[in-house]
Image 1 (cartoon, rainbow, N blue to C red):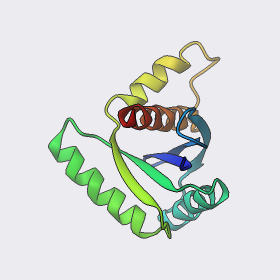
Image 2: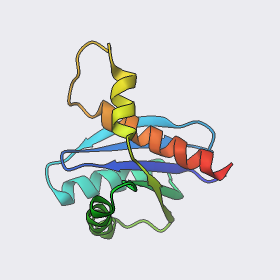
Image 3: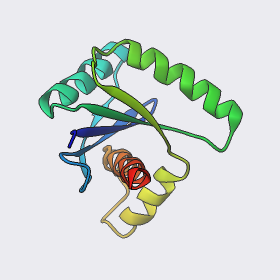
Length: 132
């Protein structure tokens, strides 16, 4: 079974999640984005550290305008990475809202990346269940 990393690409934070075998998805610490190169470097580090073979990238599917813009942004970001494995796209619609719902009542809403990585976990879970 391949190892998976999922990414929820945002302008301020990049959520990441990992699955060692396609069964269980776990959120990883989010990348706080200072600039493109720093963000790409940190995502690259996670891909290497976790020995990911499949990189699942969240893309909004419901709005064609947003989808085209995000695909352009994602393509640019992927161009900054040195990843030899398979890149797959997964619908990320409402994953952040779902993540926020899961975090409700969790002390206080902080912009520390937990929601972003929870969204990445949801994206990864959606992708893995689509394989079954």
